[in-house]
Structure formats: structure tokens, C-alpha cells
Length: 165
Image (cartoon, rainbow, N blue to C red; front, side, top):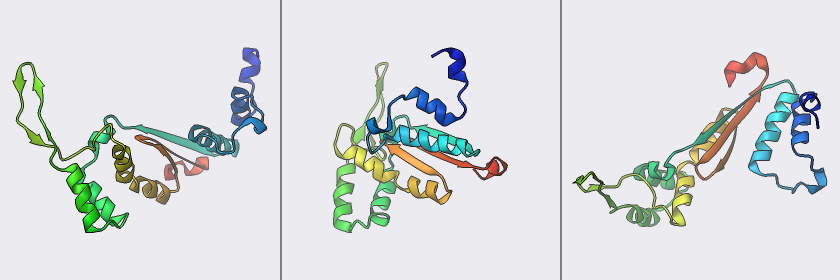
């Protein structure tokens, strides 16, 4: 396809279809999050709306999980009883850390944030910790897709209402 033909797409959806020349029968019934987000955004633009996409990729995300907030979330959002909370508290408590750099060593300190990495429970606890993000986004009329510590928040509106996004 020549450059001129590539640039003469009539709509963003036409552009997307040129990037993915697969017939609809070949596409799985459940699209990937990327295709779903892109499709939603292109549909908005095709309607003449203004679309906005925010990509969040937290650095060292699992290290940011505050133990107290996580335990409150388990109780308030998920209705966890005191026995189960005590188990999670025990799982998170008692970890220590120390830093050694250039021949100097820091004091030993309690770890109050973070979930064990490399464990099966770590990613689940992170998702539980961030579960309120979905309701915050939905309350503002936006959409959210998450995978572990990557989040895509997006929405659209008429160009005249851009300040509402």
C-alpha cells in the first residue's frame, strides 16, 4: 500500500482496519484489552467526540501497597472478618529491611509497605489494594482497564464539553 493511500483514510476506524486486515470471523469473541480500548476510542472519534486516554504504569507498584490501607480495604470493601484479617496482618508483618551501600549499612527497619514479590498472593493483594480505582473512575463516567500494575483510563465527550473530562 502506498503512503498516499495509507494517509487517505476516511475515519480512524478505517485506519484501524488497515492496521489489522483480519476478517471479523478470525477475531476471537473476547478482544484483548488493548483492542477493546482502541475500539472504544475510535468509535468515539468516529462519532465526532473528543477522546482522552491516560496510561498508568506504576514503578515498583507492589512496593507501594500500604499494609494498613490494604487491611482496611479487605475489611471495608470485601467484608473480611477479624480472623481472616489477623491472618493477612500476620502474613504482612514482621518483615525487616536494611540497606548496604559503599561499605555502610543502615539500621534495620520494619517494612510497612509492599507485598511479597514472587508470591502468588502478591499480585492479588495489589489488585485488592487498587480495587477502589474502578469505582472512582466509573463515578466520573470514564472507563478503566487494568492488568496488574498497568491501568488505562479513558473517556470521551462532545468537543464543547471537553472541560468535563
